[in-house]
Image (cartoon, rainbow, N blue to C red; front, side, top):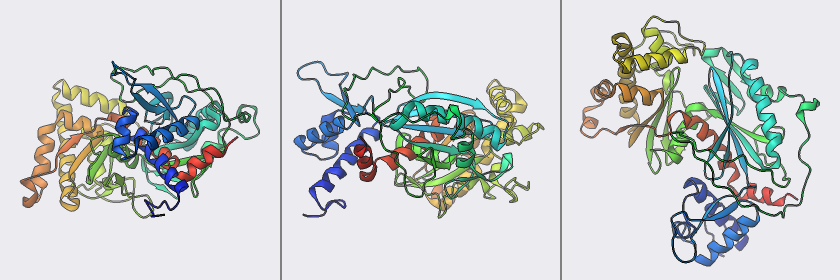
Length: 454
């Protein structure tokens, strides 16, 4: 047999097409009909029907009639199975965390959130308990946990957060220690059940107006399935834990579900207390040799002279973000505190307060100047801004654009790449954490493991 995309047998080709179909459903947000997907993937109609039937039988897909269909045989839209795989996604910030459950197609249900005191125990123990509760609730449907952290990640488990004084904090170990394996609240895993079960109809998910993350109904538990753990990836209670930098996760979400979709080379910047950034090539964030490459904020791009908490002198991130907004007005900054005050400065600036507008303008100018340096170096097709970066561009577009254009090389100034505010708002890191889980699951090996359970 001719080798097609690595497939050398009919079985391998079928597995390859199953992954392609599931990936297409996931990437399109589960809003394309079977006919559209068949054309997109260049599949024969009969092949597509067989693939969909098998994926429905395996509790991976469920079809609903298209909402826009009016005559004749209803057009079916493949989407997440009501008893199908669930990913838990976490956005861990310097002062709080959020936890969501996500299904195939990218819909998310916000489950829990909490503030913390900035210490590893204060942040990770409550989060660990929340994760354990949900792991027991979703049981064998849970295919992985994705966690976006506001700092460099080493070896898939060690996190450094300079603002909080975290150095080589073993995040999986802290999360696991939240609940002793022998304590009553740890609970027992769900008992195995036959895989062939009656499939209830999936209800229409309620939408939350204005929310950047759609909500789904609380998922129901499926039959028991064996844990799926990617090699080299740490785990919590047998569930793979995919730990990544928040900027890298935000960039991944932007490439999959935002304004960078379909872009060959893009630059993404995520701003919170300070900023991070990295290059995205063909939809893949370039995290570097060890995964610690999302640190453009620690380049000396704007001529600053302050010593950064990272140890370097004059980091760009010292001049951009919530901390810089506070410092400009003489307020205390650092330690992962002051988010509400920074938001208040933005609100005051929007109302015309002179001091607040000056602080916002200084931030926006530094952001624009640094972006010009990166564009000169990397030649991206476009630049996307998320988090506080989008807010700064919204409030001071003229200042940011002026600093950006003034910093460009002459050969680039005639046709500079567009600067775009992310449509994902602050949800980029959370959605990117979800994508890391589904990236690991949407493989022939992981689907075989899903099907091999009782």
